[in-house]
Amino acid sequence: MTRLIALATMGHIGLLGGAFLFQLAGYAPCAMCLWQRWPHAAAIVFGVMALGGLAPRAMAGLGALAAATTSGLGAFHAGVEQGWWEGPSSCTGTGDLGGMTGGDLLATDIPEALVLCDDIVWQLGLTMAGWNAVLSAGLAGIWLLAALRAPAAERLPTGN
Image 1: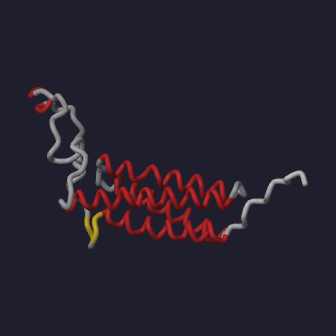
Image 2 (image 1 turned 90 degrees about the horizontal axis):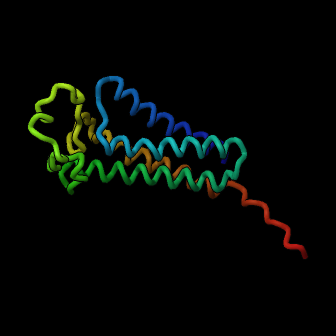
Image 3 (image 1 turned 180 degrees about the horizontal axis):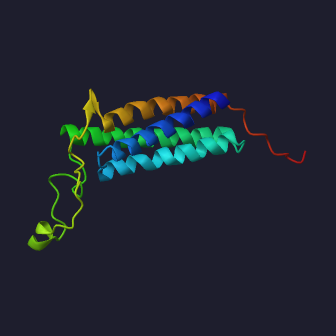
């Protein structure tokens, strides 16, 4: 059980670290990319807590939930990138200008790397979001296996 929790935690560290490395390499994240990072961070915290002995079964269950959440976000994002469904209008090419004026659009002080959620910026078979969906689903499975193997919490005395 401890090995599984450590493996899942390291998997999340790897995926989150990889996202930051891609960003350092010049691949700016879109809003949905950033959303996918939060559950990875939560899973890392749950893993550290479980490895520290704090309710390993519960923490493994929460780790599975976090992994499933980022997997779902990644799958949704991959579908937006492929044009299978629409994404949030705030970060896709179909979004409105959010009250921007012509002067705002011509301003030179805007971020250089504005990335829309429906743009594919890197792909190796799957897009980054697609890989996140697949790998995070695998991590969710590891977390679930760890939760099933963790000892049940001790029962409280009933006073009998």
